[in-house]
Length: 257
Image 1 (tube, rainbow, N blue to C red):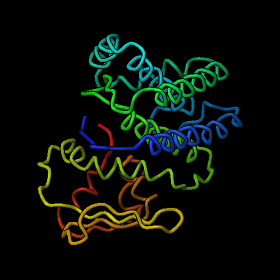
Image 2: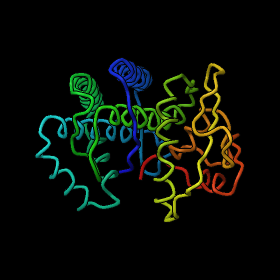
Image 3: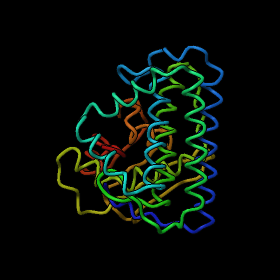
Image 4: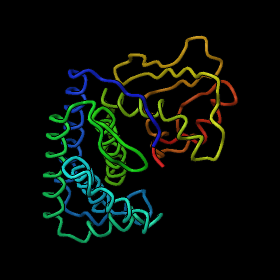
């Protein structure tokens, strides 16, 4: 896992946790009102039920890492054995459960994840895939996944997924995960600094990197988040890049392996 280098005060972490809860609640309201969870989503082979099952399974693994870190090795071995089919198999198993059971499992899991991440010391590390994590990383990671898989459901149901300032957590992971993008594409990470300027939902500019950087990415925060979570091809966004490395980054951008 890439070292994102995230650093939050206790107050900032509490706010991020509030955002995580709100993101889950928004998706919950959407899927709870939908009776047919068998509708296919943009993820090939995944229905709405698969999307919720995936989120529920990920929350369950976070709880293992927090409650019994010594048992997380079994999770890693299961993932290694399944290889590239791991997420599909996990989601399929959960999707086979009755809708009401799966919905309650997801609700209970995300409530406990939020509660435990609120209580754990911010600098306490616990095992995760490929490395270790702490609360300041896990909170935005869970929010990012909830938002991204939620986007698939919103797209499926033809409902507008209105952007909020919660996207800042997703955007930050995208910015800090630039090295991951190049690594996943089997490209050497650029040594030159980047400037990223995004327009948030309320018109505020979110910026990272030196102002005089030659490599630059600009656009809406929503488009950037859709791109780094692989929910939209670059051509369907309004993102612009200056510099070859910046253009390459947008081509290969991602925030997870």
